Image (spheres, rainbow, N blue to C red):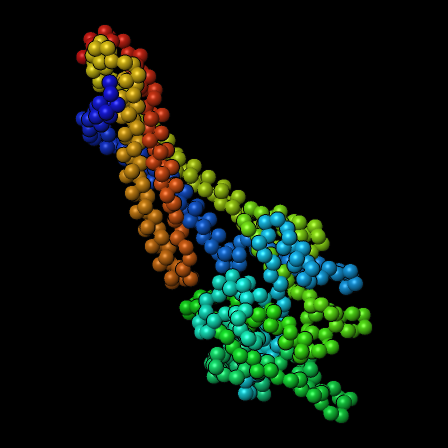
Length: 453
């Protein structure tokens, strides 16, 4: 018997008993929808966590710090310098290493002043932060001089130098255009405060340090009300332009944040506060982090948290999938019952087929196809139901997030591989459930089957 003949016979036999077939298919629909929706909730939660980690920083980034000196002895402290940058960059799977300098500076505009948190990095590293630009642009290597990029929250910390009143006291932002107003920067903060509050033993106050007019290249875009954006408090600039400027400002003096020799003199080289190590793949982060730690430096990344949470989410998905599988198991019992009843009702038909010389394998294939059809139809309808339920869940959760918190990714996520796998699984469950009834049909005696009323 040809395959197409078996296909036609199996499909027509199913619809001879519509009510029973529909009820059996309904069981498969509920089972498939249960498994898909349950697993989609686990996948959605896992994806949401990954997106949250990405918002905190790159998943393949390692931050390197100087080792902490517990005895206060800086003599043998391992510094972060250009030599270390080159050494780490030579490690396999490391794509790039970005040095970071952090220091404080004072910004002045008229009566207003602010204590800036300067974060100097290579321009490529700043671009990789994913900062949304509101005005202007991010610092560029093509800029002729040092320029600052202000976070959207920097303006909130400007206050009146005499009264101390600012945004946090009045609730009103200072009348400052961060892009266009001339904002003067004081790098020598120690000298500035000493000039403001001279010691009692001195006859004359300390000479105020020089102020530098630093142009703004851009300002970060403020997020919608009620939401938060990373790096809002920072002022970014190109490290390759800041270092020469600092050397001019301080000349033979120690730059703030830099170590000094025993005699209080500055070192010739510049040391960094952090190194940002970019790794090619997430799977290699832990190994490289361990290698850097063994070199004697402090290193951390999101990889440890991610691996831990991925294991936890794997257990959650397994539990959710198991709960849904119970429904499909019940549906499999229903398919077995339907096929057994079909065999009892079609005993004479089976006997006639055997007497006419029909191959036993064709008889088995006929009943397996009928069971597979039930699984296939139930799987298709179950997938449609799953996508519908997923849409409802995401709409309800999005509405709740809009009222209570910033919107995040979908709480239910059904990828294509899950849809395809669930459909194949439904067909396989149907065929496995119909296997034993098919064997019974093969073993029926032809003469006894024909005599059956």
